Length: 215
Ligand code: 5RP
Image (tube, rainbow, N blue to C red; front, side, top):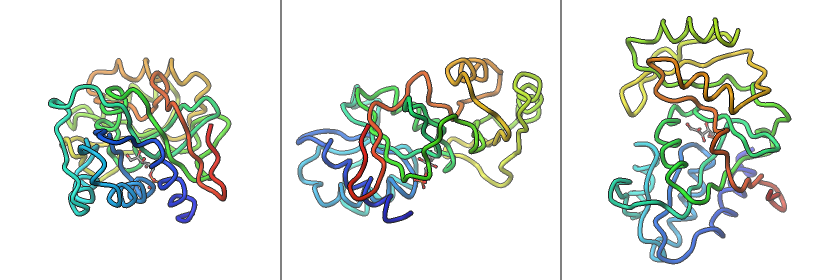
């Protein structure tokens, strides 16, 4: 699968234009994109990063990492996903970076999602849905999730997000209405963000392969 990830990451470079500030996601697929971005670093104005992990890799390549508060809207965001449906709606957060990823996706005109073929599903929910929560609300949010969805939340014990929060992974969801579920879960006090990218899906999906598939 890492070859498919590399092909997807490198294909996404075609969406980078001279002088751009590029929004950069998190994960092993994005790592290939960052490496490719490093090779054209003199053509871009910098990057906005979704995690400490990606920031470190961007800096290793000599790419300037900028604060989203100072850049204004971005033209392009490139990120991976844990699942992708035919409508380009996603589950994200396997790397616990979902909140910053969601912020940058929202701030970007075009969201290019890079995945290997194993991430494609007809209906979202096989991958446990990550939800970032304020630590003191973990049990409350877990109870609410059971009551509202019937899914089984599991605490990702030992993981602290870059924002100092915790993650619940919700198992056994068949997500037939992703926009409705995203809205519903966002209303629970203590939820910081939900790893469903349905209200703001990807604009373009690149599935790594020879040749890559773009839809
Ligand atoms: C991180 C994410 C990643 O995009 C997702 O987990 C996919 O990762 P990978 O490219 O390593 O398969 O959402 O929070």
